[in-house]
Image (cartoon, rainbow, N blue to C red; front, side):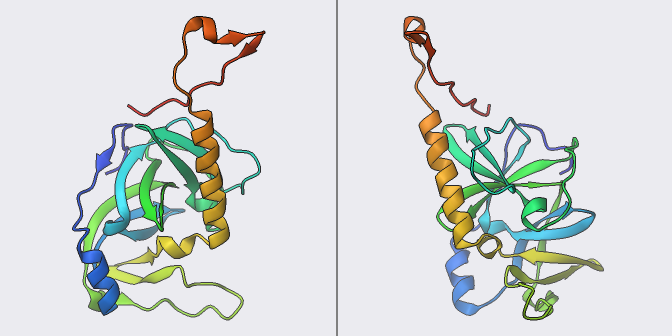
Length: 206
């Protein structure tokens, strides 16, 4: 799934399994795997809405560096998170394989930028180990577990815990700003009133 184009790749997932898995405590299931800094990670497919190519991002002032801004995705304002920066990795220039995974994080749909999408894997509950303890000073609760598949190890992330409540507030604020900047097209004579240009409409994804 490398080299994702700007055309969205929508993933169909059995959403009805989510509540049942939470009740039983089972972690096994389908995961969308991707790469960051040469390491393979995974997100529960139940959380994934679609994969899109990189598109222009409207920056939002006074937000953390890992929040790159917002995009207008077919009429929806989606905040964009650079997952490298959120996980305190070094920034990296975009390539043809860089893409955005649109996921459900709590009540928000957000886009997370990753280096490259790999594949969808079915990992059994017995093939997922608990995350190791790194000591009290290092948070690891955002790690759902360590998945093993085909002789390789993947770090499975709990996207709801990757983002803190404060992060969610910043993302909600970014969405609100993006919605305010999104305006209906106006008649040409209305675009310049007393020498002041009308706000620019956020570009929608195709």
